[in-house]
Length: 251
Image (cartoon, one colour):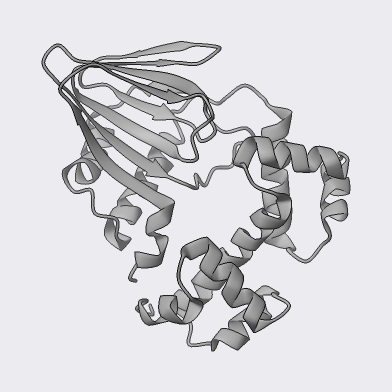
């Protein structure tokens, strides 16, 4: 499958600094990140912890983490940064900022991502295989009500995206206004926008694996009209459904 339309969901980079650099991410990051320090040192500072990263250490930064990072160079700093928007996990509250105690098998699984930063079906497969392994060793984050509510909302929307926002709020056990607040805090979007993105993800699956027409896909995923579907899809993936369909090889 051609994964061109998924590239906005992944950021595979290598960073190189020849001097000490400070990055302000106190607003919170929009991606999960796996990192590997090739040379130099790093320090990630949140309101709750300081994570010191030495050469040849692997680390994980959770989506939404608010922090300042300092990349400390004697001669230069170089590290891999593998960013991904979605972490398929059964935990209710995700994982904390942490160093990863990797073994040879984990390092071998990570190396293809380190050696080639191209986002394609092969590298995405490598990443999610690696995440499946890391899920068994990563330390969970402290329970957060807003994150558990957000993940509950995602599950409800994936199961039935046609309910009203007040119905979702009721099933989450909170008020509609608090639901809006939690989703904004966790994902920097509204509940309705979250639902649109989930519907578009379902549409992408159909675009990638079937020969349905755009109109048929629109009906199957639950958009009110084909015109509205095209508008929302373009706002999410920056291209039309028909263009995405042409760029995709059916499996």
